[in-house]
Structures are given as structure tokens and as C-alpha cells.
Length: 303
Ligand code: NAD
Image (cartoon, rainbow, N blue to C red; front, side, top):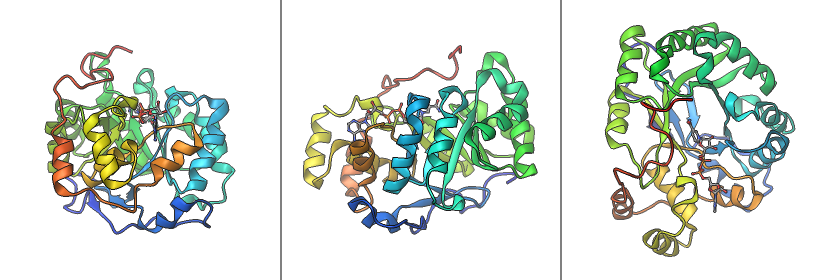
């Protein structure tokens, strides 16, 4: 995975996630769940479940429900303190391990201790390998993210993690780790929703074969009252959440909406039987705003 990613990186595939026995109507569309090819040749589902703020005591139930619905990518992090519940939810299901795509993240205080932190996460998840390990935040004032990146590259070479990437990295952070190692991250997971689209960063990703993964893809619930999005939802016979998730998919992003409610988990999965018209994708893209950020700024975040 050295150097710039091959031209296939981020390529949309034909929907290769294999389904499981039908349990929910949404699963009828399972065969069309899209995937992307990462710059190291591995394949990532374009849709999954985020579990930030899911209490560990509820994580098993939430994750196992999502897997039953058809979700194949689960996004957690050491700092969410729900890796063990997430792992229990995965273990409750008989879906073959290779059909699942499990992501967790290295916390900021562990940048200089990544191999141990990684093994702790793997143990809590009760897995023998991880699909994607991310550096959660660059925390530039600590100046240890390049060292952490070198450790992640080594973990990948050792085979315990299939792909490695980063989260909340800006262009200068990305340039630095690429310059220091020659290794391009497979993914950058960033805050991205219709009101905050980070177009310059996304363009840098495209240029370098880095897949963009959208966090807080629904703007943490702040988009549901938008009049225009409500109109679009009725045009397509979908909900605002489904239209926004579909926009992420149609833009070529990996999208990981979070909910603990079974009905919403199922609703969010109902996005594989329609596509947005080009004009509507462009119109949603025009909702971008320079002050639309909801989460912390990676340059100044101090935690
Ligand atoms: P989100 O945009 O997914 O919104 C979640 C909120 O929307 C919740 O309150 C949920 O109840 C509500 N919701 C979800 N589906 C709904 C529906 N169909 N109808 C009505 N309401 C609905 O926000 P998020 O949780 O911040 O982001 C998603 C995931 O992204 C997280 O769980 C986590 O995995 C990841 N994330 C990563 C970082 C990072 O620093 N890397 C930061 C934040 C989040």
C-alpha cells in the first residue's frame, strides 16, 4: 500500500456484500449494498453502523440487531468504551467473519503506545483480526501522530489488521504522514454532512486514493427539520435520513449513521433501492456552509 493509491482506490463496486437469510423487508435489497475498493486492494462496505454514545450495556443488542438487518460494517473506538459489548453483538451472530468489516480507533493518549492499545481493542472486541484501524484524532500539539502512523503501518505488515487509516486529519497532517512513510492511509474518517462538506479535503482524498468516510452523516439529527430535505424525502417516498444517507452513497463516501433504536436502524438501511437524481445531489451539495461544523476542529481540539 505504498505510494499513492492505485487508480482503482475508492472505486465503486457492484454490490458484493453477501446477504443473510431474509428477516426484514429491507434485506430484499441486500444484494445491492455497495462497496468501495481501498488503495490496498481490500474492500469496504459503503454503509455501516456507528456506535458512538451507545452504552456498552446496550451495544451487543444494537450491533446484533444491525447485523440481522443486513449491516456489515461496524464503527467503534476505544474511547467509546463499548468495544466489549460490540464484540459480544458480533459474536451473537453466525455471519461469517469475512463478511463483516469491523473498525476501531486508537485514542489520543495512546499515540506512543499503539501496538498495545491495538491488542487491547482486539481483545475487547473478541476478534483475531481487525478490518480497519484508525488514528482517531491527530492532536497536533502532542506531535505524536506520525509515530502512531508508523506503528499502524507495522501492525498492518504483521497481519493483525487488514487496512489502516486516520480520522480527523487535515491536508497538512495527511501530507506529513505520507511524506514520512510513503504510505497513504486507506481511509480518512471526517465530519461530513450536507451542511459541512469539507470539499477541499475530499478533493485531496480523491487525488491520493483515500476513501472518505463521513462521521455525523446525519448532522447528529440537526437536518431533519430542513424544509428542502423534507420536500426531497416526499419526492422519493423516503425519509430525510434515508435521502441524506443516499446522498453520501451517491457522492462516493462511506457512511456510518448511528441509532440505538431498532426501527431507525432498519429505516437507515432502506437506502439501496433508489438513487438521487443528479440535480438533487447538486442541490443537497449546495447546502454546504463554512460554519456548519458541529464537532471539534482537529487543529485545536485539546482532548
Ligand atoms: P449521526 O449523524 O449518525 O446522528 C445520530 C443521531 O441521529 C442520533 O441522535 C440518532 O438517534 C439520530 N438518528 C439516526 N437515525 C435516525 C433516523 N432514521 N430518524 C431520526 N433520527 C435518527 O451522528 P453521530 O453518531 O455523531 O455519527 C455517526 C457515527 O460516526 C458515530 O456513531 C461514530 O461511529 C462516528 N463518529 C466518529 C467521530 C470521529 O471523531 N471519528 C466523531 C463522531 C462520530
